[in-house]
Length: 115
Length: 114
Image (tube, rainbow over all chains, first blue to last red; front, side, top):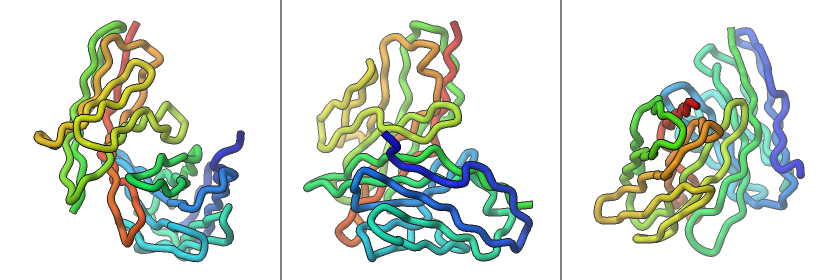
C-alpha cells in the first residue's frame, strides 16, 4: 500500500530559488495537510485543504503557496527559498469523521536545505 | 488558542523499565487527543487516541487516559523494549471553520538501551 507519497525526499536549494514539493495519496481522503518539522519545535501546520477545491492557512503559511490539484494531490511551493525554510516537510491526509478528528496518515518526509 | 505541552527529552530507559511521558493541553471545547510515534527516518504514525473524557486509548502495550479535570493525556507503558526507541508526539484536534486540524506538542525522544 502506497499511502501518502512525497517527492522529492531530499533537496538542496540556494537562497532565492523556487521549488515545489509534491504529495499524492491513494486512500481517497478528503483532507490533506502540509507540516514542517524543526528541532525543538515539533510539527507546525503550514497549509491544509479540507476538501478538493479549498485551501486554508495554518500556523506558519508565510513564504509558501499550495495547490490542491485534485482529490489525490496537494503540492507545496516555495517561490523564493530562504534559509529559514530549511526543514523536514511532511504531507498528511485524513478522512473527515462524523465527530472528533480523524487519524492523519503521513508521508515519509522531504528534507529541504536552503543555503 | 490551542496548545500541547509535553515533557522534554530525551528520556533514557533500560529495557523492561516503566515509561511515562507527560502531556498536558489547553483547548477550547472538547478536543480529541492523540499520541503519534515517529521512528528514525520515517513519518509519524498514529499510536493511540481518545475522543472524550475518561476514555483510555491503548495500542502495542501503550496506554493513555483522557483526563479532562487535569487537562492531561499521559502516555504509559509497563515494560519498554529497544524497538520502542522513537520520538513520541502528543496532539489534539481543533476545529477550524467546521474542519479539524491537529496541533502537536514538540515531541519527546525515547531511547531504550538493552
